[in-house]
Image (cartoon, one colour):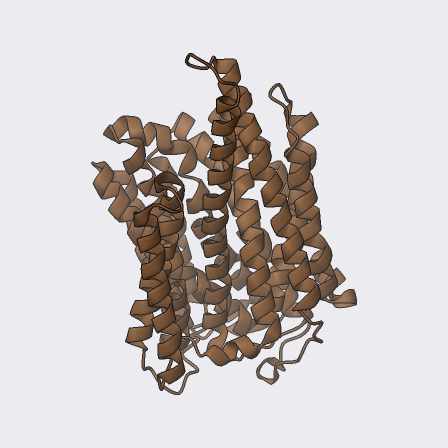
Length: 494
């Protein structure tokens, strides 16, 4: 890849920019999963109830998912480099505050600020990739690295969280971001091109920003609370109604606003719409693998946090195998055939794991499914990212990045809420069908829990089939275009 001119006027390798942006994205993805293993230790340290404890995860998810569109549009209007650096700086400071937290409330607030910063970091970083690399094979290579990081970071987070919690203490799950964040900011100031706004205006659509951010946050909140309250309970219905009204107003506003936050015409790009929809279903199915499998390994097989994390390493390894080779395949056959097949590979992995027994083994009952899952995830994430960003105008690169991230967050939250509810209901029904007259023995509870996992995995496996159908009937093969603004960049050799 050719060099680009950095903000300091010096020539910088494209590979260094890609590594820097991927490292920042790794921090964002990592913090979704790394904290899960540390939750019992945090609960013990601050004497938090189970209900309050979940807010350590939910606060991050809410603000991250809710502000992604605003963060992406901010990058388009006010400069990608500036938005990225501010986002990383705030994320680093919030991580430090997490580690220094003296109460559960302080930790939850800091996690919310972390999620907010991530919502600006992630779409800004992806939009920098979109305008730095020429559309076609060169950009596909860059996006394959991005996709591998985005899809494999959660699995690495489980391992790193286990190691840090067991050997250094739960606070290091947050402190680890501080030196990395400082390095990213200093390096970004030196090597990132200015990337000023390409928009003709700087008018931020405030009614649109408030309504879509509030609507998405309320939607994610409703999805998190629905399994606890009940899907038809009045509080749940009120949350969904508020979300629906806010998002309906957002769409109405975008049709009337002179400078809309999200120009609806962007959905005329058929592959962007199809890829975002596909990723919504894929995230809905795949989030279950980390949740259910972590519980199975620790509560059923008795694995330690570190051993559980090591077990998950097989997923990013499988992801890397496909993600690094997908650009070559896309160059030959395009991304549509891959998106028709890869989600089915993910579904087959989930279907395999849905048959796990109470007295199972990792290599016999879990590993084959996780390998299939990783292979399918690597191919799907890379191809979907390429499909969702191909043909997008440079002035809307941040918006397209925010839409892709939003589809993953909403899909993951929706899927996990639905699948957790299904698993819990199946577990309860299993015990009630036994008509026991006393507290069920541990063996019965274990069998019922695994039965619930079966149903959760099985339903999750159907989401990949829906994603494959979306690829078949919505996404169209599109030949790569040459971006004239990058005519001086040589094609990447892989």
